[in-house]
Length: 348
Image 1 (cartoon, helix red, strand yellow):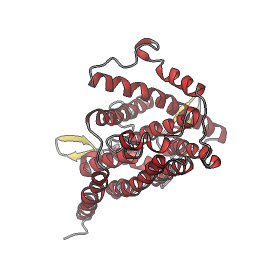
Image 2 (cartoon, one colour):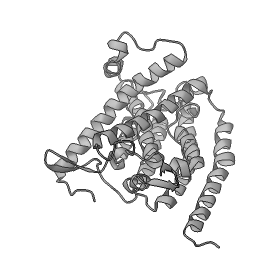
Image 3 (cartoon, one colour):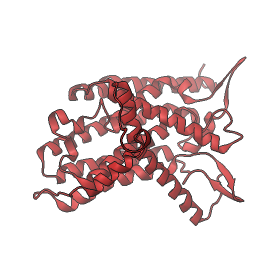
Image 4 (cartoon, helix red, strand yellow):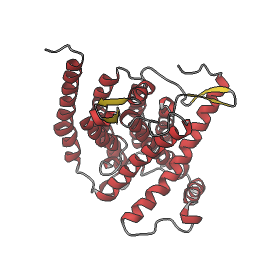
């Protein structure tokens, strides 16, 4: 059972996790540029510190020093608050991600998570869908037709792929019997009894189709290539954030990369056992390391896709969601439910 921590200790855990997330987001940009450079036979950042490690700090200083421009015809109140929506919703989504169980630190029982909601998975999905309001409102408030088109694309894309993303997880919920991310993680920290062969009970093994569909929908949900139609520079200049500059643009920038990290943490928890791995039972720090390594693997997948695949046309984007992924995810739900019923002896 989770420890009943005092309020101040909850704030400390939340503060630590939030700052680790922000630092991770900053160095995700460095990681992406280095991986893309290696794939394209380039050097990437090299002039800002050893191996370019100070590049995220240089980028932050540059963005803070830029002139903040607001279009004359913009809806200034909405223009100001829209970037904050996507940033805040991305940050609070990490509240239900379990980085482990309850451990003893300096004689106090500390939960390695901010909160354990019994509907934690729905909490992450809900805030992911709320984040798109930051895109739509920012596009509307900019008084720019290209921005508005980007916002409309984002709305249609989220409506389509949010459905796929949620349905892809139904099989996981049926197998675990819970919507709590901590309970789902604990369910996977057992072994499959296959006679002489012992395998971890990770849901990627029992739900491989759902995992593939989830990853496709997650890339589309975060507006990343090859699904980055809301900010397609080839036809929309820069899409929904065309009119944003300086620190306001940085909120969109932060929100996108934090969303990538949260979605990757979410996937690692749901399909790869979260903190489960060799030695994680004995050392809780090793469990956190396993979770971070799995998350980095998903982030590498994001970068790999961006470097490899061209952007889809908009009709292809919608066709993949409604004509391909939706039938497949519904089939996966039916098959999973049937197998679950057979396993419980409720069929035949």
